[in-house]
Length: 286
Ligand SMILES: Nc1nc2c(c(=O)[nH]1)N[C@@H](CN(C=O)c1ccc(C(=O)N[C@@H](CCC(=O)O)C(=O)O)cc1)CN2
View 1 (tube, rainbow, N blue to C red):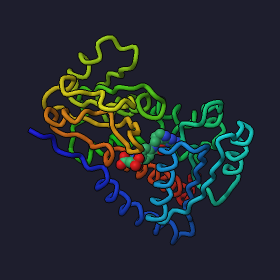
View 2 (tube, rainbow, N blue to C red; view 1 turned 30 degrees about the vertical axis):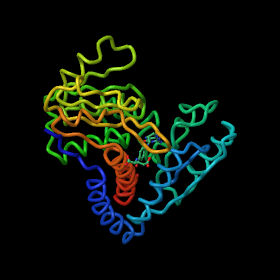
View 3 (cartoon, rainbow, N blue to C red; view 1 turned 180 degrees about the vertical axis):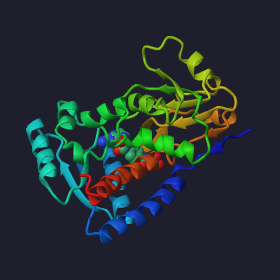
View 4 (cartoon, helix red, strand yellow; view 1 turned 120 degrees about the vertical axis):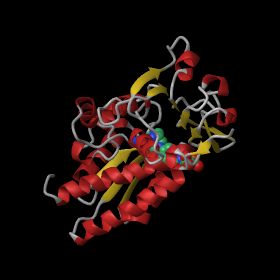
């Protein structure tokens, strides 16, 4: 048996078509959504992801504001760039691409983002809203994973989900999202302190691997018929590689490929966050 492929590229393309219609409607009302990105340094992965985000903007009609800063950027220079985007009326939402180079304080930077312009859902006010179950922008990768599973009719209500990785962009917020009443899953959040990781992954209906270690999730760690979501990325000879070992495809019922799974959905949800916010502005809720 080989698992069905959950095609994130195809779903993201469909979502972008839907978003382009919403952007056209906003522009007719005189509202032009504009996404800003702050990228510090020369990390090859981050360069690719930010490039992809701006390509997506062009596809759906969102204006792009790209701020690229060198590797030796100081915290003060980074904060200046953030303040400038807070003040820029053409920027309706923006992100600070993570990870930042060593020596820069990510939490301090995220705390300076105007909560009304937080397109990533990673600013403290937005994460607080997620904890409190209040409306707000959701972190893009967790939102993308839930959307991808929904569009493939994967039952979340009552499902046992094992999330491996407790990072602030994926694992932690994903646990919060999946345990909302609207998703209603039971989540086990595993991490480097977990004693018997395989016991937890083997018990799960859905395993979500967000570790960043090539092929770490092996077939013997997965229950036959489980759904597997491959989030973690490493670069092998410059090419992206996922956390899920190829043998898992022989055991699972559905798998998201990596690349071509969660990554494109992350980008689509970023656009969606920007458009959601612009629509709130149009409705006078801003
Ligand atoms: N500010 C943020 N930083 C980071 C986030 C985030 O949501 N906000 N998430 C990740 C990286 N990420 C988003 O920026 C991201 C990862 C992957 C992709 C993507 O399109 N991947 C392609 C492959 C591209 C390639 O490497 O060739 C795919 O999976 O098919 C987009 C965005 C960490 N940082």
